[in-house]
Length: 201
Image (cartoon, rainbow, N blue to C red; front, side):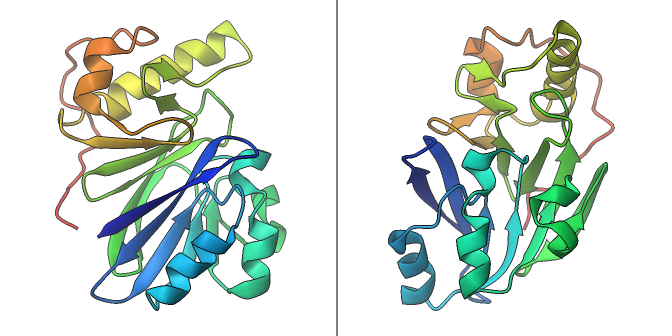
């Protein structure tokens, strides 16, 4: 698995290409904007774009879909039907899908938005705006903030310390770093989570 990072300068959001070198297939996560460098990354490596994963339906994470779907015909996954209308493969709850020869685990994580999802591929979480280096996502109520913290503790911060977090904004981080230094969450030792994730893909 290879991960390529692209910065959306309009919304300062992160877009990721996740490629399977064996199958020459790729996914895009949160296409806030589609630039020549993203297209060149796909074309110069002869990657077939098979899917787009959206963490939540905010413009800085989905605005590039219109451009992308004029060029390619990927399947689009997210928790909000309005992301791409009838072209959206709506996913809810927690589960797994097989895309580009990789197992993609999706986990609902409401708080920042009602439709917030995180994706785990191998040992890497793609968390959108739910958590980033040193902070958690904004919320519109104290209740949403409480729910977000509970979900982060149970579903993200309970994972192995070396699990990588690729957020929707800002630099990458790890579960271990966020346990120690993220003052927005109060991580406590938890019972083993009901969500167990394999990192062998």
